[in-house]
Amino acid sequence: MAGELWFYHLERSSVDEVLPELVEKTLARGWRALIRSPEEDRLKSLDQLLWTWRDDSFTPHAVAGSDDDARQPVLLSAGEDNPNKAECCFLLDRAEPGGFAEFERTIVLFDGHDESAVVAARGLWKRASGEGASVSYWRQSEAGRWEKKA
Image (tube, rainbow, N blue to C red):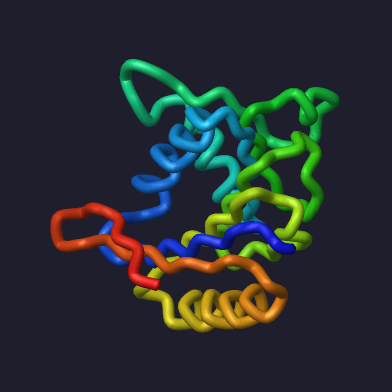
């Protein structure tokens, strides 16, 4: 049985605004996180963001490629492997999910203003559903809260 796939439709907030909080919630559960993006510039930007996104704390993490990848609570990667044995995988920029069944939860963040990203997310939803994954769709309310819509 495949793990859960949660689709976050970003219309009111950017990845940079949403991702750090979701990662923090993941760590609070006692899970490790893997953040995948095929875009090197995105990974560099997230590396900086996760150190500085809040004045009173930081998110411990690293960019994949060192001998310490397996020890990282949060790993940023362009690859499809899971070197830090994360329970939660975040997919950005149409990153390939690889074997999403190996994760407790895979979270797909997609830009609702980018039609090709919406089409790609729909395709992944269909594929994941066909493979037996538990899928859900989340959208921000007018007040900015995430609401499960499907």
